[in-house]
Length: 133
Picture 1: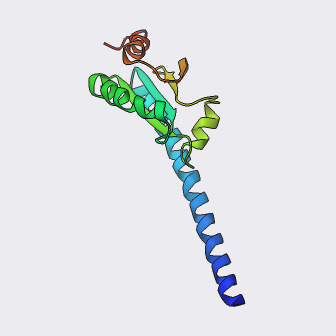
Picture 2: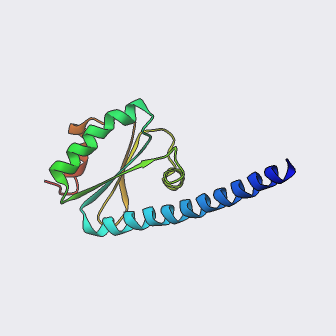
């Protein structure tokens, strides 16, 4: 019985350690992707929310529409802040509520932020301030 318990404890600790390392790698990759898109697109639109949040779910069709209409000028990125990959992004952008939309210019500088559900028409008006057509 002690052998089984010891085996379970060791296996669990190895698995958790592996998950933590993967999470750090994914977070670093996510940060790199935001930096890379900042110079390629006029605007990077970051949606910080969760797939389990009702207002966040209502943002999904709007994000898809923006990506379809303005995909060559706007990079749309979604982070589920209730996951190991998204949590560091919530910390980085110091969000207070979800959903939160963060808009970065072509230099990667934040120029606008909105908390809560964001109507597509209003969101597009924000994009237009940076020359998105």
